[in-house]
Amino acid sequence: MKKISVFIFFLGSIHLHSQIVLDSITGESIQFVHITNEEGQGTTTNESGKFSIEYFAGSNYLEFSHLAYRKKNLPKNKLSIRDTILLRPYTVSLEEVIVKGFSARDILIKAINNIPNNITSSPFNLFGFYRESVEEDGKGAMLTEVSFIAYNEGDNSSQGYQAEIIQGRRTDNHTTLNLDAVGGIATIVQNADMVRSKSRMFDMDKLSDYTFEYVGEIESVENPIIIIGFSPSNDNIYNNNMGKIYIERETMAIVQIETQKDPKKIKAIVESLGGGRKSKKPFFILIEAKATIKYRKIQDKYFLSFVEVDNVRNGLLGQESYRYNSNAKYILTRVDNISPRKLSTNYKIEEGFNKQVIEIPKLEDWSENNTMFFSEEEKKILKDIRGSHN
Image (cartoon, rainbow, N blue to C red; front, side, top):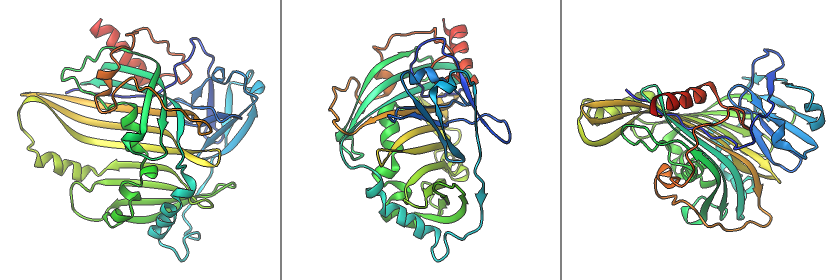
């Protein structure tokens, strides 16, 4: 059986000095903390809570923000001598005070109606980083990473979206079945930006497909966050999204979505396709899927700022079976909506991403000290590729 993983990160200089962000109570590292400077440029901590201030050369102040923690602003010059940043966690209240007189569905409808106020409809450029890696049957098989600039007309249509790779590097795709993982920048941005596109549980015409419930409230002093749970409302096996939606109480802005496929319904889909089927061509069956999607406020509007997607698939060819675990990360680092420019797209967003980045140099000697540091899994993937495929 074989496995895949996809990641996003920042292409940076080598030998950066790392800082780490910790929970002030438990002392545990905090992953995916947004770190931004006074101009709105940003990065995030990795799975180990690490980041590098060298990404912020020339900055004066840095803001550390995370949905579950109190924001912290620090002068950058203090971080030159301090390697640890402590964030105080918020508590989650289960008192249903804030929804008095409103159902969870009513609150979500309010949030949907406020999308035009919270999400920009004007054209913009965004700058970001994307990394995807692949494991097959538990061994590293591919890694690709790029920095990019994208142009968006202000909506979520493919016609108004272009992306241009600025810098990147990759290994060969060593998957036996040539699995193309998630599919690249365009796939991530267009499919994950459910708020902008008002798709799935944010489509008013599809609300009846879901059951909504109040989960709790994050007691932020700045702006409390309402947590709404959602799950399928019927037995249709293809209606299988479930998870949580985080909504700012004051602005009714949707700031985070955690979603996964209902395991029971995915199992039913697999069974309906025929458990022991054989295939003359590579055939992939999705058996697990989950995603975390985050929005960040920049110049009074919210933009898709972070996406992490994890998929597990079985790949079949003849009587052979492979297990793939794919993980993709997208990170927004800067937005320009003052004078956006259209781009000369240097890969076809309709085609497989890994087929389109063939011109990127094949560099096997990645440093582990980039602006967004490697996770242990990513280190293992590169080690496997170097050891098994060179």
